[in-house]
Length: 200
Ligand SMILES: [Zn+2]
Image (tube, rainbow, N blue to C red):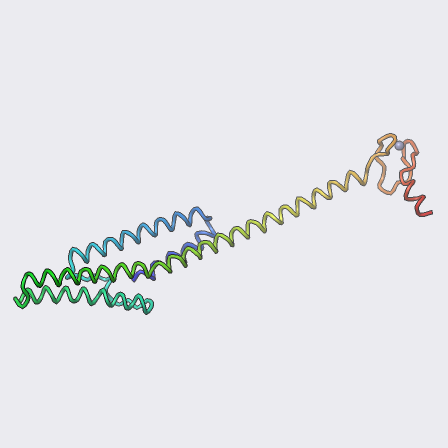
């Protein structure tokens, strides 16, 4: 009974995480766990207060063999409690015996429910793992975007650095000359002296 909601919670968390970000997922999980706790508490309370009514939770669940077996144990305990009521009502069971057996089966039902709750633990971990995965994916996407951005910035910087260098002023009069100018157009200073000398 509890696996389907947990799986749904986990599955819903992923798109929430991708669309609305990690804080929304944390809120979502908080809300879901709170709801789950309320439901579990309500179910336990109902069983303890009114063992003759098993409720929807005891019907038709077969999510996982272990959990199914636990559900079966719980159902059997609830059924035993019902039978006790019946046996007492027809006078086959004394008050004393009834009380002792009732306590035993209630404890059995509670133990089964505790075990079921613990059995959900791995699913909770899996949900958390999925959350972590979604966060990691989001982080990777953000990092990639940041990398692209940084690369762009780097290119722009290089370009910007290149540009002034290309039209660096004449070392003598600071006049800006064309990139391929050999002599300064203003003072006639040789701009490519070294290169020219090296090649000749
Ligand atoms: Zn010059």
